[in-house]
Image (cartoon, rainbow, N blue to C red; front, side, top):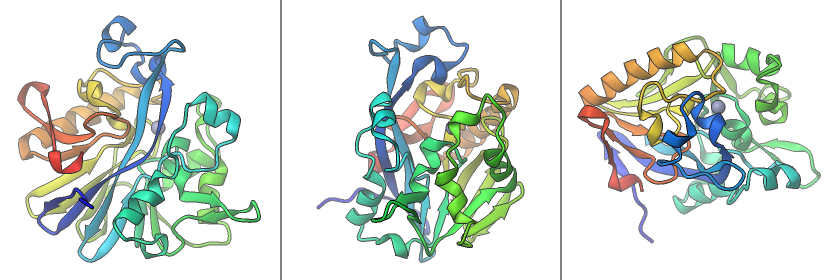
Length: 284
Ligand SMILES: [Zn+2]
């Protein structure tokens, strides 16, 4: 079987597609008029557009890292139907294709704790209880994200599901809280960007001059590569604009590989001069 990968210095990177689903177009594009976004992302009769849950599986200096876990397998049937969920087992299937068992994963990073990023952190066991998907992994989460996810404001409440993340700390001790920017493992950096949620972080993997950034919902899909095209769910939209501009400037200048959280077509690629997107063929 052909397994696509990209090698950047010490980094071995594999694209993780942890499921497909649909989201409301207005949620995804906020104040951008529909006549503009629907040319790029056509909506169905319910105004929903196609989404993927995209992340990375990486080998970094001998460690296995999973970034983003997608929706996971705990949604009710009704909810799964509402969001047209497909292939929710993609997380473990992708690992299996690489010959990696869940207990062999050393570190897990989700960019934030929204249900469509953190859902795969836990699963239902045979008795219907909750279990950790990666029980031996260190899980790096911003402190501010954890606090907000436990006590979200009314507007954000429905986007957090406590069963996704509280088991990481209840009865298990696999969470490591991060405050701001940090190098959590050699070559593995988290950058606190906030904006979308208080503790949203971008993962930056580095080897020498080479780098790959997993953007989280700072940049969901290729139309969001325009700085002002942002989601209506962002709690601090102006901060999103600032952080996007900063990320794009660096990514363009140093030719960082970017992985976009919800893109369905070519989620990994390079931002070129003038905002052009060049897909990375090794991460298709
Ligand atoms: Zn989100």
